[in-house]
Structure formats: structure tokens, C-alpha cells
Length: 387
Image 1 (spheres, helix red, strand yellow):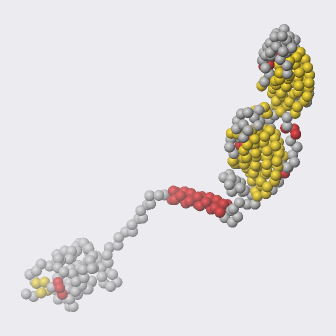
Image 2 (tube, helix red, strand yellow):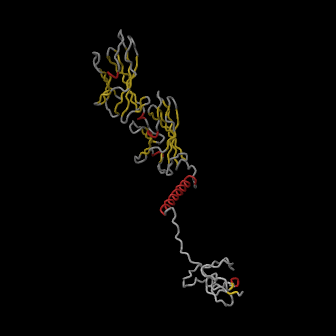
Image 3 (cartoon, helix red, strand yellow):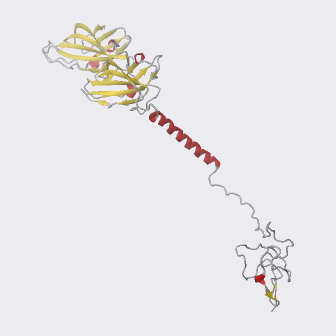
């Protein structure tokens, strides 16, 4: 049987002349030798789909073309059909917006900046403990029954063992406290210690290393730090002891401060009188800023009057409580006792009995007068007190 070429190219669908020589597709140059068919064999009726026979170039797929399209499939410069051009795909949007990315970047920058600053401050050049200068002070005052001694002052650019240190300058006080009272004392240095700078500025501690409670008779040493610019000298500073509601004491950190104004003052009186059948002698009066473990209120001080009493009666004398019959006149104020060790009764023939009565008095009171009120038919007695 005679063999003829197909009417259309199995690859690109181009029309083929039956007697075409050489036997290659004029469009895509497909070798048509293997596609020879007999005259009775059906021809390709749909050039858009190749026959099921073998393809000489299986790696090159034919371009799809509609049978009714008047335009041939696009050709490449080498005569090969081009693949259809797909439209560009739009990029998928990220699940995170630009604003969130900016915030994350800013947060990372802040963290890195902070870490860098702290690293420079504490691990950079000169990050160790800076030079420390020490100044002995050894000044003592009594606060709330505690003998408080400023042992020394240290000054440095910073203290690396202080978690709140300021790199602009620090001052450290070494304070020794001894409880001379009969009850525990709470030494809250964060409340009772302040530094007064030149010009009157008052600063609170930045750091305190101390036990709070101090038992009777116990001694402890505490560390109290203040942020003070390094250009201020130690001798220009004043330690103020006492809370804002208490009688305060200022200690100049010069190493030779005169603190006599805060020491107890005793005035000898030796005034005798008779009251309620007893022979009284007002021995002395003492002024001080603390009573046992109590600090006087702001602008006040304690005044304690001490007596000796003899009972020459043949029976027990019971004058009662001094809270009822004893007063201290300070200017226009009549003050009741705040403490007393005076007996409320005296046996017959008792001599040399002692006791004391304490009043809380304004520091600016110019004159003081002890008053024993009339009681049980006995007349009032008064005694003037001067310091």
C-alpha cells in the first residue's frame, strides 16, 4: 500500500502537502517520516491534538490551537512554537503588616540600646569600682535611746555593690548604733536619715544595708548610701537624723562638729517644800530629745523632774498618781505627765524615796513652772525651773 504524509502536522497543526519534499513540517520542522500512513488510514481531523503515535521529540509539547482559529500558533525565532505566556502572579500578602514590623524593630533597637548602655557602664572601660576616698567622722548623737555614731564617710563616682548607684557621684555613711534603752528600736534609715547639700537641698538614701530591729544593749553597723554629685565635698554635707515628724538633729560631716546642743542638759534645783503631809525636794530637771526608746516630736523636748520624798507621818501617806495632781506650766500651756516612776504611796517613817516625772514640752518655752495641784485638802505648791 502506498504511504502518504498526514494532511496536518501532528505537532503544530500546520497543513502538509501530500507530496511535500523533504518530509519535514514547514513550520516546526518535525520529521514526518514516522507519520507516513496508508491512503485508507484516517487523517488527523483535529490539528489541536496530536495522534497517539510516537513523537520524535517528546520533550517538546505541541502548542494548543483552536481548530477554528485563523491564526497559527506563535513561533519562536527558531521555528518552534512558543508556550502560552501566563499572566504574572501577584505576590501574596504577608500575615504581618508593615506597622507591626516597625514596632518589632523599634523594640529590638531599644533592648539592644539598653543592653549596650548597661554593658558600657558596668563592663566597659573602667567598669570596676572607681576610686574611693574615706573621711573619718566619729560624731555621736542619741536618737530614740540609740547612741548613733557616724564612723566614716566614703565618696566615689559609684559603688558597684549598690544596686541603685548613680554614676554621677555617691556618698556612703558607716553608722554604728548601740541601743542604750530597755526595749527594741526600729532604725528605719530610709525614713530617719537625710543628707543636706549645699544650698539646702535634702536627699534621701538610695540604698540601705542594715537590720531594722536593734535589741536592747545590742550594737550594729549599717551602710547608708546617697546620690551626691562628685563635685561636692564631704565637709559641705550635713547628716540630718530624725523623721520629718520628730525632733531632728543635724550632724555636719566635718569631723569636728559641735553637737552639744543635742546632748541632755541637767539643771540642779534642790528646792524643798511640803505637800500632802510629805517633805519633797525637787532635786533637778533634765532636758533631752528622747525618752528611753522614744524620740521627741518635732519642735518638742522631754523635761524630767527628779524628787526625793520623806514621810515623817506616823501613818502611810497616799498622794496618788502624779498624772492626777502634777502639771508643768510652759508659757500658757499646762502639760500633763507622759511618764512617771514616782510612788503613789509612802510608808510611815519612809525616807529618801525617789522618783521622776517627765513632760513633753515645746523647745521654745522660755519659762517652766512645776505645779502640784490642791488635793485632799492640801494647798497647791509651785516651783520654778530654769536650765
